[in-house]
Image (cartoon, rainbow, N blue to C red; front, side, top):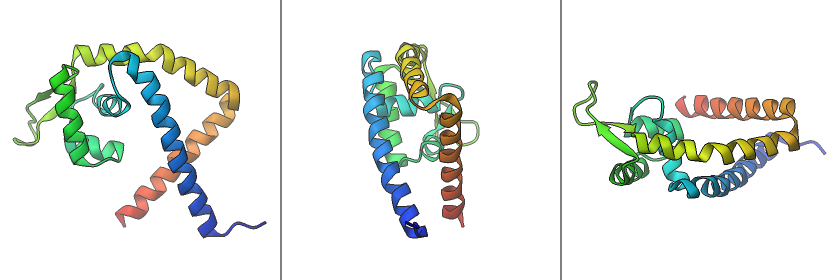
Length: 148
């Protein structure tokens, strides 16, 4: 059976929705023991290496600015993140991870590594690499189309 362009697009979208749900469920399992939720981990993960404004986190993660703002406020309230002045913009403060935020993410790492190893055992490293590269390509293509 030959798949049409529309069939391919629909299957890619539906599979992505399912994958999103699967990854969120796994992320909740991994993040919970560290005192985080999947959403908190997602936002915190975006600022572990460098502080970003809320809008930058939203762009990077593909989520709304409003939801990032709500989560950033909670992370700051819980001591996992802090707001810093932004030299590029007076009103758009930078979100940065605190020592407690970094420690929480480090607590996730052993279970994260275990899940990664299980996935590699299921798929093999070469196939997993091709899948990740394909997903990255698909995301970049959709981004290019959206920006036209």
